Image (cartoon, rainbow, N blue to C red; front, side, top):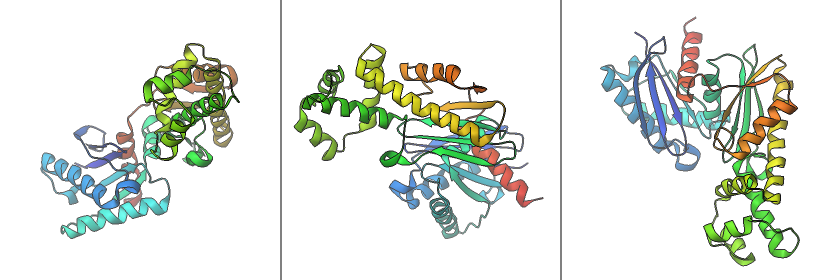
Length: 310
């Protein structure tokens, strides 16, 4: 029997699954975070080892018996960063007397794309705190739209929505903007009631800007003019992502899977965005993912193994 391990490493937890060559699940378990750019490669290597070691014990095999192990981790979108985690884990194993070469690191978005369409062509749009879009064409080539981060990107994301909501409140405080219910929501839920408090919370206390996005979305659903304008602008940005990806993939019908709390959930923003997909794009089909990201990691692990054993 062949053993393939796929891990979905996020900022709060790491999900591990082990399957055979036919994707039959043999082991599942979760542990700590894998955001190695924030907590370091050492702690993440420890987490990966713990999960893989538990899997090996459960399956009554050695770690060296795994045919391939692949983790899709937040922060691994650049090859240089991914290489750091790969080297760290292999060194971690070596210090324990284990030599294992078939370990791979990809981005969390990449494994989500692979899982969503079972390795076939398609695209995923991720809009949570940040935003990014990935697509795969019929030749297996991967394309990317967005993902430039909060300083020069993240259009259509929770951060961008929250930021515009706070800007609207700041403008109201100054007398430069119209009245908005967002002012009261900020005061009632975060105790921010004036210019001084807003500046202090944002610039000194590292206020989580994206956390304000659900309040903007709810205010828009209840008719707040400023919030509705924000939702229209940000959903337009996501539509622009979709149209750009369509051009890159150059396929007649583009399958689209939505990931992230702002658009995958059942809320006013998601509803507006999906309505615009129907009205403003052609041949875009929204569908649920075929598999979760950790199975996408397994699929990629299998592909790496096949390439090595041709």
